[in-house]
Length: 321
Ligand code: DGJ
Image (cartoon, rainbow, N blue to C red; front, side):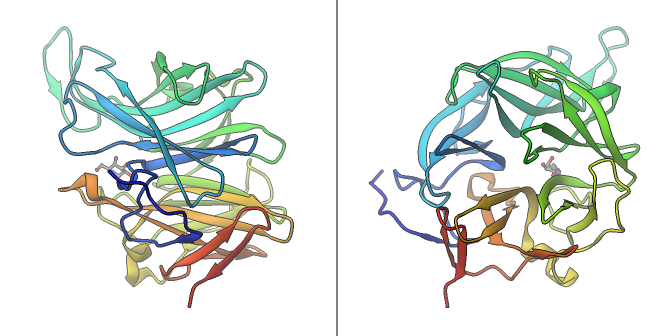
């Protein structure tokens, strides 16, 4: 461990060191801003973790570039009928009214039927878990797990609109990509806004220039594929057709979407594509591809990964040549 020098440059695809010099472990993550602080939560997949638990990494930053490790949050097996289990894509919302931090998790795995004892493998549980905490770094207590609005839910994404309303995006395998509003206390999923009949994972949304942009990947496991986007003037749709966010032969430059972050500065608004470069056999070494998007007038495109600087105060992002 060493103390990491401060920088203003994001280097997509490289090791991304935290303040201790360790590669950030927050894969499939999500970010919230509370006052002047950003918090990044994601799958913590270091080597040598206790296999009785699944871990979420929690980091904080004031500039979205330099990240300080805060803690890992651990979860035990949420249901004894699960044979194999995973906790993926944690997303945390801060509820101004209740002052609680509410974490949504994709909880999944194989299930043993308690009566017949038959095991259905893979990702058949298809639920969200909800955990709450009084502070950003926990302790988080898992309070429930359910299928949102009764639907299967695998990859989840979070979206907070400009008016503060919180939404969950979830992948419902038989039907498609659902966008739903959370209840006022964020503890449950209350109302469907849209069902987009496309099979998409890694769902993310941003509200920019009067339009909603929804992005997602196709269903190819850990392998990258051409991520796509659609637009709508309302979260309820109608949604446009989906188009590629990058030249399709690059497979999104080897990455998969997890979130879109809007940075509103004094001079500019920048939207950052936050993607994962998964390394399924060495997950601890999975990388990040964050790039400022070219976005506006219904078009969105992801530039090729290259170093860039970000100033969160002015909102300016500059490619380093
Ligand atoms: C694709 C998903 O986007 C990931 O989060 C993970 O669930 C993998 N599938 C598992 O194969």
